[in-house]
Length: 70
Image 1: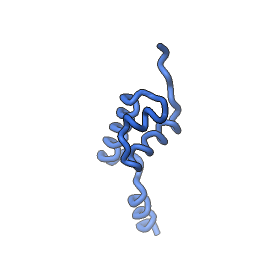
Image 2: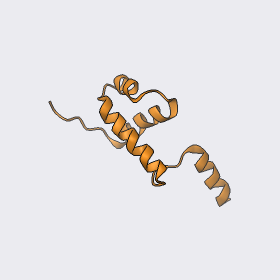
Image 3: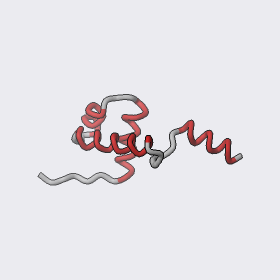
Image 4: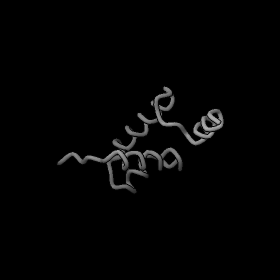
């Protein structure tokens, strides 16, 4: 069995679906035709990076940053 690779955009969209909709990673993975463990790993890494302050900003954080910059 060959290991499938996913580009950064696909990973970002898949994680965003889980985070923003609250759907279980297993359900989203099935819908996308991928292994649920792979998606769960991406989600865990993203959540860990966000909590550590090294991940992307969420919408309210972006709005606050824009307000502070203005």
